[in-house]
Image 1 (cartoon, rainbow, N blue to C red):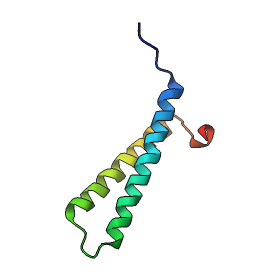
Image 2: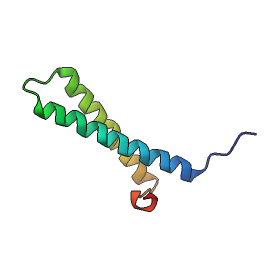
Image 3: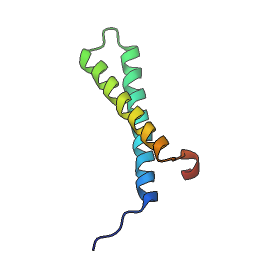
Amino acid sequence: MGRRIKKKDIDEELLDAIFNLEREWKQIRSLIERSIDPMESSILRENLAQAKYLYLLREARHRKISAVRYN
């Protein structure tokens, strides 16, 4: 049988994904705010990154994961 996946490992991966998506979302938002005429595709990318980020936050809350415990 394969290696059993531990809940802690999955929780850490989830937190890493949350932090990465937050950084990506904020970078896109910053570029859009500085643009004179932002492209529609940039706005869609920002909305998608924000939606992914918020979804993962809800998943973390559902799993009762706190970033404070893993720092």
